[in-house]
Image 1 (cartoon, one colour):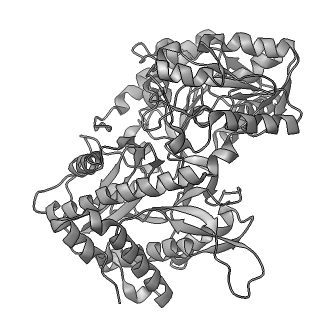
Image 2 (cartoon, rainbow, N blue to C red; image 1 turned 90 degrees about the vertical axis):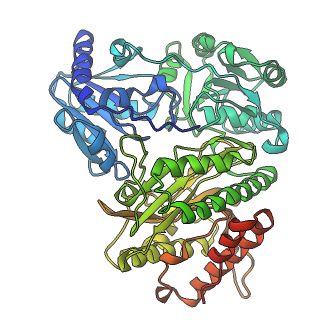
Image 3 (cartoon, rainbow, N blue to C red; image 1 turned 180 degrees about the horizontal axis):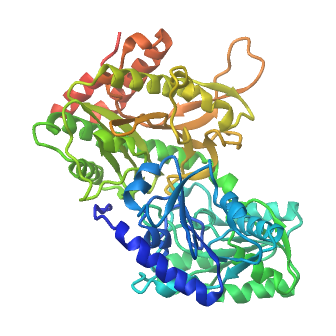
Length: 605
C-alpha cells in the first residue's frame, strides 16, 4: 500500500512537547518561535524528518503554521482543516485560529512586545516572509533571530533520518524536451535579466529542469536537491551521492557538474566573492541561502523561479501522456464505482476498505508508481472534512441514506491524476440532491467556459460558486489548482480561486472542483482535471478565446442529480460528457463493469 491508515496524531502529547520546546527556546533567548509546516525546500508534502508541526501539535494537515511563546501556543489553519485541527490538537494547549481571518504575521504584530525576540529556522522561512518578520519586529522595537538549527530538532529525540532514496532519469518520451534545452531556456532568462546565476531550491524545478524523478517525498516523485544555474557553463547540482544510480549519474553528467549536497554552502560563498548578480525567488527560496550569499557581497536579484512558468505549460508529449494517464485512471475509477455500488451495503464496506480497493484497481494497470496524495475516503459526516484522512481510529462504515466522498489520484510515468466523486449510498435526501446539483451546475459552468486571453483564475472562480451563492451557500477552498506532469498534484502558478492572479494559458492543467460541506452530515465535491486550450472560433467573434478540455473520464452519480434544476445546455453537456466516457472506456471493460458503465452513463432526458 502507498497509503497508511495509522493515526500518528496524539493530542495528549501537545503540552509536554510544547514545554520541551519552550525550555530549548529559553536556552536560546527566544520569546517566540515560528513553526511552519514545510521543509528546506518549501514543499507541500514533506518527508517524515520534516514533520515538525505534526510532531509538536498533533496536526497532520498539509498546510498549517504554529507560533509558540513562553505563555501561549497558537495554530493557524485554513478552512480546509478547521474540523481536522479541532480533532487532532489539544485545545487547552493551542488556540486554533482560522486563516485568512487571522494570519500568523498579523497575530505577531498584535502580540509581540518591545524588546522581545522572535526566532525562526532560517532554512524553513522564505526570503519574503523573513523580510516581513524583520519589518514587524523593527516597527515594534523587538528583534528577529534567524536560527541556523531548529530547536525542535534538539528536543525531538526519535526524529527520523533524511531520506536517501535512489533517483532515476525521466525518459524523454514523457518529458518531451531534453534537459539541455530546458537549461538553455533558463540561461536565456538570465541573460535577458542581466543575471549571472539563479538558485533552484524547489525540488519540483530540479526534477523538471534536469528530467529526473525520485521518491524522497511521499506521493510526489522528486529528489531533494538544489542547483545553481550559471549564465555561463554547466549548472552545479548538489545532491546526496547515495541517490545516484549509474544511469542517473551518466544522465546528469551530460548536463551538470555533480556535487555532494554539503558543498552547497561553499558554492554560495564563491558566488558571493565574485559579487555575482544572483536571482532568488523570494516566495520559495529559504532565507538561509540569501544570508549566505550576502555574507561576501553577492547582489541579490529578486525574481520568479525560472522553471515555474515553463513547467506549467505542458508540451505535446506531456499532454499526450496526461490523456493516456486519465484514460488508464478512468478504467480503474469505473471499476471501483461499479464495485462500490454492488458492495457498499451488502458487504459492509468501510472507508479504509474503499481506499484499499481503489488503490488495488489502479495497481492492476501495472503502471501505477504512487498515489498522488492520501486518498480522501469520507463517509457521511467525515465527507464534510475537506482534507479528511481516514485512519484506523476514524474509520467509518458506509451507511444507507448517506453520501460517500472519495477524492483520489495516481502518479504514472506519463501523468498525474486527481479526481473526486460523490456517491449516494442508498436513497439520498432532497437536500442532498439539491446541493449536489448546484455544485454540478457550477462544475459545468466552468467546464463550458470560454474566456479571453489574459483571464485569471480569480476572474472565473465565480462561475463555479454562483449557484451556491444564490442560496446563501459557499465552500472554503479554491475551485481549482494546477497539476504537474508526473510531479506534484498541487502545482502553481495557476489556480482558480478568490486569490488566483495568474493568467491561464494553453497547456496549463488545472482542476475543476467546486463543493459543498454540511458539517456533521455530509460533503459534496465533483472534481475533474481540465486542460486549458485555444477555443474554437465563434462565428462573428472578434477576439481569440480560451476554453477547457476535460481530461478526467468517469461517471457522475446520476442518482444525485435533480434534473429539474438543470438547463437544457447543462443537460446536453452532462449527456455529451457521459457519452464520451462510455465511448472511451467501454472497449476495455466487460461483464458487470461494462453493464454498470452503460447504466451510469445513460442519457438524462
